[in-house]
Image (cartoon, rainbow, N blue to C red; front, side, top):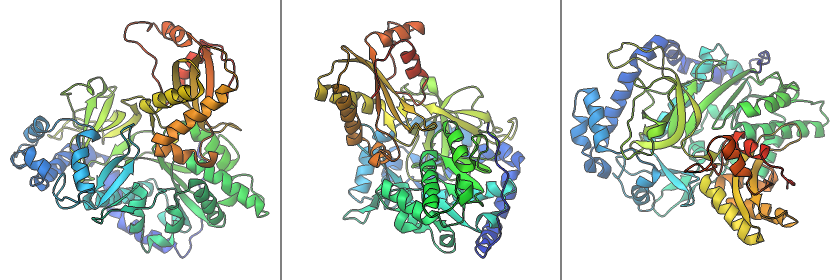
Length: 552
């Protein structure tokens, strides 16, 4: 693990008054978060109370009536109530809710999944069936707001000075789409676009880049505009995905040099940078590059980093100990969490466990019940627990509920926020083969992590019947275009080749995948090579059993 750089002595300024107010606002919360015994003892009770409140609140909705929420919510014993809830509502993915969400979003109908009319929907990339729309209620906005305050409470608990952080600017690399409003007045956009209008004075005095740039939908132009602005700002706090944050920092250094400043690293431009808040993708592959860009030394990281576990469906967890990967579950944030053993997630009626019932060393798929009307919703992330709270009787446990994300229950690629799934890869290979006439065999895809002069990107290892000629370049272009056509997140990251480079297609001889499977003892039967993975172990194993003729 890279050591952090020394904390700079960031000066206090007039806007530090915002930090004084913010520190006072989170003071009581900071003390509570530091009391680990409280969270060990009370997490189970807090979660059960949350579930009971949501069931009672939604008992009159269409979904609540169909699933007997009124009866279930009146069960006084928490364990029996949870058992009845599980018997009434199955574990489901988004597609089980899509008809209800259509009635809510397109028809403006109230009291479907959540009381009243839901006026906001977050748009996220779906599968080949199209984008998904996630309801965002006022209760969910409140939950997310309190989670954002917890970020500063955790930083405060670590001993960081909030007034020093707010003595400069806090830079957020958020969403990129304007809101679409239908005839019912219902707004749809990415989550950042939904919450940006909520940033008001006095927070607006320290917020960068401001709403006009933040909501630009052209990412290359947006990064350029942010760099133009931020190169002359005293940035002390950055929140964003590592890949885009890295790209922005590199551009800021270039801008500084163009202005005649002696800048070899970001620290030369932003000497008071204190905190990097990140989430959504694994940080470790980016650590050397971020450290190099920040300090000029790949072993000297940004002074303080805080990892988050956010999702469009709700805010799940925040890293509470510096240098430790575990993130503390937001057990009092208005959402209820269950965890299904990974090997059971495709069962018709899988077992599910609350946060106090899980076991260490077991991999679980996260299932959420949200204060926006998603009931026993499969989020899809796979987690393991580092510490487990006590049961309802307050006995046992070894700490707050802390978890780590270890993957997804379905094969996918999301190294840079591109959200590619198996169906995208299979569709794109088929389209490219059809367009070029190349005969393909087995294939798999993986991310290419940025390193030195190498750009972030996507690599496809592809069996070809004959040695490729110029058609391989055409295949790569068709493959790229096919994914763009069905995946808005990939399109965003590929805009003008700025975030991700064009995909690399690596041809291998026919039989390469079978040789790799044989080496793993998995040849024949139901064994097959995954079409994509979020790491490079599979693709590098395949390439080790082949002699690729060329890369494009």
